[in-house]
Amino acid sequence: MATALNDTLSVKRVIKHFDFSEPYWEGSKQKKLVMQYCKVAGKYQHFPRPVSIFTGRRRDIEWREASGKGVVFSYTITARGTPAFRGAEPYAVVSVTLDVGVNFISNIVGCTVEELKVGMKVKPYWHPLDDGTHLLMFQPDRDPK
Amino acid sequence: MSLRDHAIVAYAETKVMEKSDRDVFVLGGEILESLLDQTGIDKNEIDGLVLAGLTGTGAANPFWAQTTADVLGLDVGFCEQVHTGGCSAAGSVARAAAAIDYGMCEVALLLFADTHVLEDKTDHSHSYRREWTDPYGLMGPPGAFGLLSRAYESKYGLDYRMLGKLAVTQRNHALMNENACEKLRVPITVDDYMNSRMIADPIRLLDCVMRADGAAGLIMMSRKRAKEKGLTKNIIPIGYAERTNFQGGENLVDVTKSGHEICGKKALGTAGLGIKDIASFHPYDDFIIAIMLQFEAFGFCKPGEGVPFIRDHDFSYNGDLPLNTGGGQISAGQAACSSHNLIEAVRQLRGEAGKRQVKDTKNALVTGIGWINYGRNWGSSAALVLVPE
Image (cartoon, rainbow over all chains, first blue to last red; front, side, top):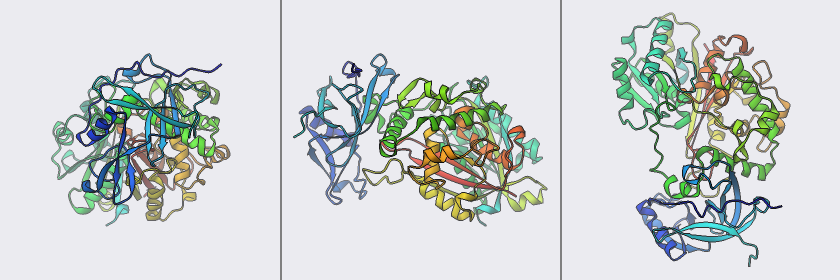
């Protein structure tokens, strides 16, 4: 018998953005994962910063679209959540290594405790928020191409 | 002069309280009074004040160090608040020595007073949390250590009963420490640890530190001055290093490695000691697994061999590697700006630990862990080697 995890989709989320993160949230409106890329280092970075973490310069940053596919790097199952998440337990918080070489902390939907494993392939699940943006969550990629 | 030309000449500590029954300034005043009484120095000799930045009560006051100087009637040439989170206590020792060395002050009060249960002004909202972890319900440090523990388990495997052994050892020490929080002075077994409820699986309740209120403090001056004043039983810092945002300019790092790897080598190198020379170990403990990760980072054992290392050693006060002999923060309570393990090391080296006194007082290694960064382990690491005069 599989043990259900709460998808946390019922949790109300109001997110205050940093101005240097806005391109990410703009992209999310179209369910596009737009991430910071350092042209000099040739690497992505997450979370968004005001400068490249590789060179320290703002001008080296550009925004590029990523697939959002990845594998579970780690996860924790929360038995008693933060105040906004009370009543939604148990829910999983996952850290996903995206194919562009960054870890992304998120929730997973449509997944049981038994299925959730380190190394499991996942793909994006875009959860709509009231402000027109979407929250990037993940779901098991049961048929990876 | 160098670090080792400075001395900790006195320490003071209140009992750890589940919730303080008096104001943080009252606690600070009690510490000051105790330190003056012990050393016989005049209040007006204190010309340096160093506070730990890890304060919930003072968090919203940008003038916290000056306010504290004012409340205590101190007129100082060096007024400092150390902002390396749980490394602040150990970091205060190094900064006080540096300030004395530079001539900014001669006698420094290091004060670690906090009532973050009674009055918490902490605000993490101007950080990554607001956009990148709060919307996903990641529960602060327990959530972050849940991710870290699972990543370690996935890389090396993890026998949680061995973490339970550390929890039990520290709890036994708290039973012998009358200054530990009474709520925590209850015996536990490895089975109690294993069966304690999950908070952020695989982090259990008995993995976690409990916030508590209390205060502690130290007086530091040059060794020369300490000798002139006839102060004995002085404790000398002989090696210190810290690292903040270790590998912060990289993305995918090995989260089982921390800045302790670097600052351990540096602090021990300055001290002229090898890790095998360490007589007692007082690592920062916010979660039990942090102790095991530090065994690996400092080179007590190889990476991934923390579990067999725990199995093969006795960490009780009379064992082969005494560990957090006051109970650690996890069994004494996370109070006094997380200075507990530092104060305990000083007490042990002075031979004043009573029935939990370690036999070998030739040195002690104290560490700090501060702040939680995004998806890694921790933001600051510190190491401080102490010896008796």
